[in-house]
Each structure stands twice: as structure tokens, then as C-alpha cells.
Image (cartoon, rainbow, N blue to C red; front, side, top):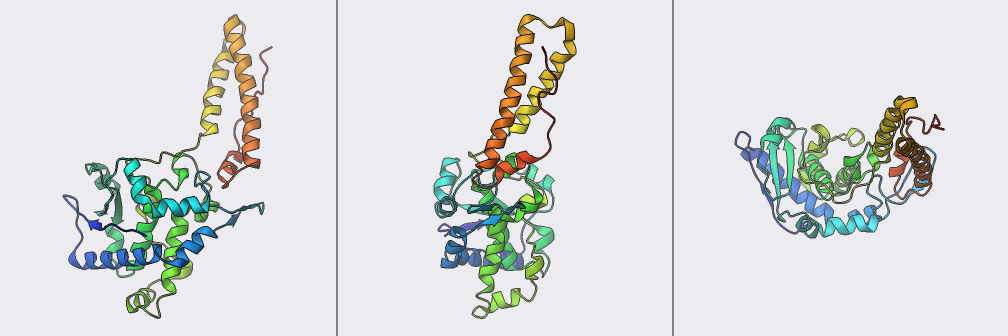
Length: 290
């Protein structure tokens, strides 16, 4: 559960109105209640998903192989993680109209969560949406989405930690609508089947200056660089020196080994991330140098 206060901030050109601040405060209260609830803990620990080949994963997609328990522990101890990254502990909620405003904002040592003014000014954008957006962006700040560093398969997007938490917040809050009038009125505006809370990292792309310390090596980038060098050496043809010929043979052997290692990673994937390597890449070692 979020223990410390969450500050509502502003930029030079953009600020929340009094009404919008009240909506934000209601959303923050809902977020705190959900993240501190028994239902949230159970849903995180029990989370699982299946890919198109019906292979089941009992952990989130693109979460750097972290177990469900590790994901929950990081959310609970988010202050410690922020300290490791050099952040202060206090979250700051900031308004934005465009990506340009985010880029022009001078970075501070507080973890910042951006909320779209184009959304919050509408009645349909309820405190539930705000709670989901903050929860989503908090997961991104905590390094729980390693797809920041590599391409993510769209069909598995809903199984990532940020997206899953955004949906969990809405579904858990829905269980309380009979007890809390503000939540009941919010759900008059919400289509639970087409729920979209427009988190900034989805709307405008990565907005966080500091990134996760836990990233995966992208085999495709390495393979691509080796293929480029391989083609350059092939172009020399009869002019290859002994050293260049030896290097070309070595590159071919490395490419073949990398392909084998990629296949092994797919077979032993912890969270489905390595399934991205199954996307079509240039053929390896198609020509021989000897």
C-alpha cells in the first residue's frame, strides 16, 4: 500500500483546477484502498495467462522474469526501489496537454506520474480512471514492464503488470460500489468491457527519464549488428585478408550459436518475454566464407 503522501503539482503552463484536484484526491484515495486490499494481493499472487499455443505462465508478461510474489513485494516496498534509483519517495501527479510539455519540464528527483488534461476535464474520466492511470504508471516507474527495452506483442499487452494493475483497480473498486456512493456514481460512467483510462506512457510513449535497472538483452539487435558486419566482409570477396576471413568464419559460428540460444530461451521462458524472439528475423549464416 502507498504509505507516503502523493503531491498534486503543476507546470509553468498547465495546472489542475479545484474541481479536478478534488477528482484526483478521490482517485488517490481509491488507489490506496485497492493496493492495500486483500483482493489486490490475491489477484497479484494468483495471476496467470496463456499464450496462443496454450502455454501457461504463472507470472506477468514482460516483467523481467519476476515472480508474482516479487512483483507484489516491489509494489509494497516501492519506497526502497525509488531510493535505489535516486528518487525521493513522494509521488507527484502532474498535468500535461502534450508530449512537448512533458519533455520541456525540468526533471526533479521525485517520481512523476502524468495525467492528461484532455481526459480529466471530461465527466466520463472518473476517479476510478485516475486510480487506474496512477497504478499503471507506478508499475512502469517500478521497472515492472521490461517491454520498454524491446518490442512487445500487442496480443499479450493485457498480461503486462501495468495493464493488469489498471484493470485490477477498476474490478476491485467495482466490488465496493454498493457501499461507497462515489464509486457507485463513477460506474454509471464506466463501460467495464471497454475500459480505457489513458495512461500517459501509452498515450505519448515512455515519459520517464529514469529507467528500470532490470532490462533484458535484445538478441535481435546483436544479431542485426553481426549481420551488417557479415555483409560488409562478404562484399570484400577476393580481397579478404587472413584475419578478415577468420573473423567472418567466427561471425557465422556466433550467429548460428545465437540462433540456438534464442530457441532455448523460448523453451525455458519464465514470463513469455522470449516469445518475442519467434518473430521473423533475417536468416543466419546463409552463405559460407570457405
